[in-house]
Image (cartoon, rainbow, N blue to C red; front, side, top):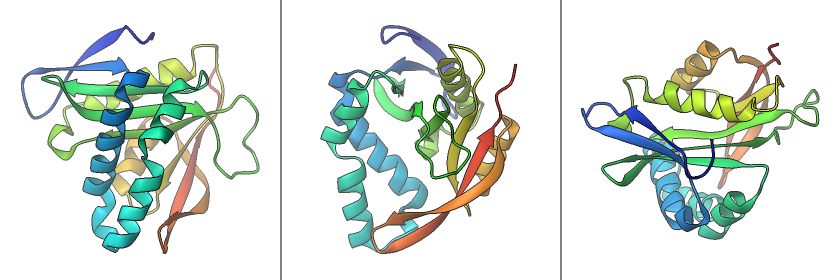
Length: 188
């Protein structure tokens, strides 16, 4: 999918169409804001406010988003509903700390929707777009990290062929989360 190509998706629970498109450098601010908002909606209750604020300021800084958006080995998508970004996804080379990660392996870096836009298959449609991009040059092993207590995400990834193969510590301020490493072997 090129940056000017869009896919129309049905966003739940509203009946209006949502548009999935490749993000550009011009989207860095919107991506930063949305990424912080979706992370906070999903995980914010787990962390002391100062830890959450420090993590968000670093992980989702506008400059970091620009760097990712400009990198030719990464792809980022925005899901927009009525012109407002309500979801985002990112993929690129695997950077997870697992001994079996090999050069050329791909990783789903992010796949988030605002809570009011979850359900109805929107996440699956976003996943299909990510998988198509990651597999555009042929089969390869794919990876994703998921919080150990996010059972919904683990079930979602399992439906797409991912299995737990390891874990690592993901720091959010002074809190160390246990993340599961999930892998989907190359499929001919």
